[in-house]
Image (cartoon, rainbow, N blue to C red; front, side, top):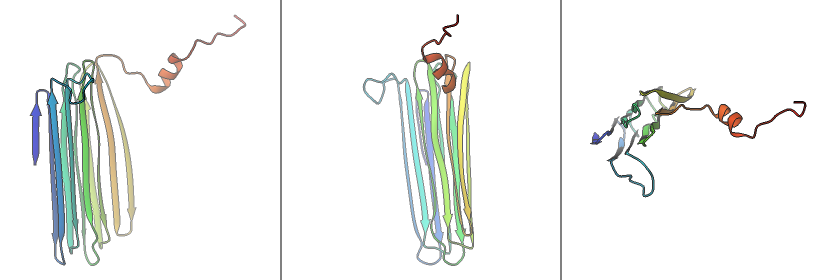
Length: 194
């Protein structure tokens, strides 16, 4: 498990893999980074930055299980934004293939916006019982906030996959819908009759 806090940015990730029986193989990887005060990218006005990535893979066993979890938050002067995500893939039985879980999340805080975005996924294959569980909770405070979420699911006999992508923003200024922006951003059209 990796957990790092720098000022108002926090990132935490964890990955586990288990394979038993047969010729089991497992692999896990986590990367966590935070920065507060100075931007990690020259010329950008970030107050806080956080990033986390975790991947787990289990294969070649009679029972395989891979799981990941990640938490990320940034809290500038705009109310903050956070994501808490987890995924597990498992399979058991003869001919069991790999189980894999992965997550990545990022958080950025500027003078007017706190933004968190990321994805979490799990897959399990080729066993008599292949199951996956994916969850992603997110939220934002502040006077103006918005969340966008997308989910993809695939369940076929002996195989399962799920993925959730989410983005959440908290802003000191009103957030415009892209449709409103295209209407307000164009030239004014006045009928020649008037």
